[in-house]
Length: 129
Image (tube, rainbow, N blue to C red; front, side, top):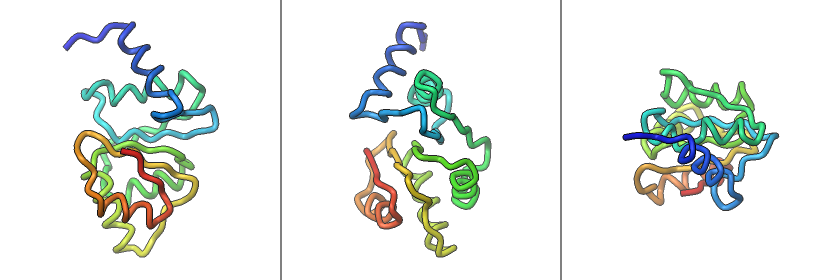
């Protein structure tokens, strides 16, 4: 696949529309999405476009590590596939923990099971799919 500068800029602009991510300069974004997949949905380019902070998770994608990263960095928006959020939800239940607020989670890549959305929203995080 070939990416052009134009397609990358247009994707980042579309991601920042209000009905998509609607990132703002005060946001801290955590894309738990592989860079090889549409450049992580364009998020690494969308965040600096509006002055938002960008936090990358590295190789530790388990629920405990993600929760610690979200808390330590003050993440306000995070994006990932259902499996990522299922692991986080399982950790929240096992540790009797909750998600910091404000935090908005975006689920993509495949369908979000309704139980997953309800579970995350039960921890105070609105889910966008």
